[in-house]
Length: 457
Image (cartoon, rainbow, N blue to C red; front, top):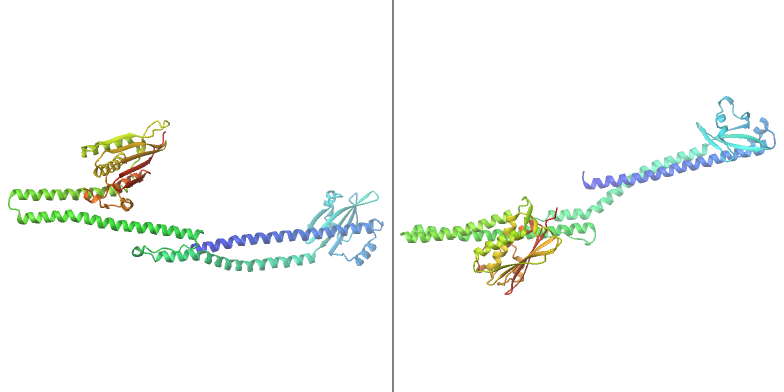
C-alpha cells in the first residue's frame, strides 16, 4: 500500500474514532439527562399526590380520578400506587393489581433515597412519604413519550451527522495528505532527474528548517559525496591507466627493440634488465592497487594487538630500507590507570603496514632525523606522531594527498605511485581511528594517528 493511502486511511480512522467517541459521549449524557429529568418529574408527581391525598386523608378512587382530570402534569400511561408502612396496597390506578412490581422495592426505599426502575417502556419512581407518624410508599409510573421522540431525533441527527462527517473527513484527509506529500513528490521528481552524467544538480532545499528541508539537505549531501566519489574514481582510473600504460609501453618498446636490433648477448642482457625493471614497476603498482582494494575489506578479525610492537616492527623495516636515516622513538604521556599499555583491537599486519607507509614517506622526503612519538591522548585514546623535516606540502597538496595515485609537484621527483597515504588512511579508519597531516612547504610534515585503546577485561 502506498504511503499516501496509508496516511489517508490512518487519518480517517483516527478522526472517525474521535468523532464516534464524541458522539457516544453526547448520546450517553443526553440519555442520562433525559432519564434524570423524567425520574425527577415522577418523584415530584409522587410527592404532590402525597400532599394532596394523604395529608387530607382522602384516598377515595373518585377523588383521585377527579384530580387526574385537573392535573396538568399527567404523563402518558400514568399509573399511581400507594402502600402503607405494612406493605399493604391502599390504592392503585393499575387495571390488574397482580402485575404490580412495586412490592419488591418497598424495603429499598428510604427518606433520602428513592428507587427508580423500568419495566418495558414504563419508568417508575418510588418515594417514602411520612404523615402523622405513618409511612407511605408512593409509586408513580409513566412513559416519557415526548422524551423518547426527542431521543429518536438525537439518534437520527448523530447517525446522519457521523455519515456526513465521514465523507468530509475522507476529503480532508486526501487534501491534507496531498499537501503534506507534495514537497516529497517534488524531491522524488528532482532526484529521478539526476543521473551519473549530471551529478552536479541539487535538490531544492525549501526553507532549510522543517523535516522536508532536512531530507532535501541530506539528499544534497549524499549527492555531493557521490559526485566526489565519481570524480575520485575517474581520477583514480585515469592515473592508474597512465601509471600502468607507461611501464607496459616501455616494456613493449624495449622487447621490440631488442628483438629487432640486439645481435649480441651483452645488448640482449641490457634489454632484458630494462624489461625486468619495468616489470618490477608494474608488479609494485599492481600490489599497491591490490593493497588499496584490501584496505576496504571490513571482514577481518579484530584481535587484541600490541600497537607498540607494530610501531617497532615498522621502524625496523624502514631502518633496513633507509640505513642512512636516523629514526628516533620517544614515548609521550603514559596514564597510570592503564594496566596493559598500547593495546588496540584490530589486525597487526594492517596496522604495521599503515605505520610503515607513514615512515616510508617521512624517510623518503626528509634528509634529517625522523622522530616517532607514541603515547596517549587520554586513557582510552592512543596517539602516534611521525615528524620529518622534509620538503613539506602546500595546502592544495594536503587537500588531495589522500586521493589514490595523486602525487604533488615535489613528490613526482621521488619513486612511488601515490598509494601509500590512501591505503594508510583506510586502514586507520577500519580500526575506528583518525589520520591527520600537518605540513608547510620547506618545514616538513607531521602525521598524527589516533586509535581507540582496547577495553580492558
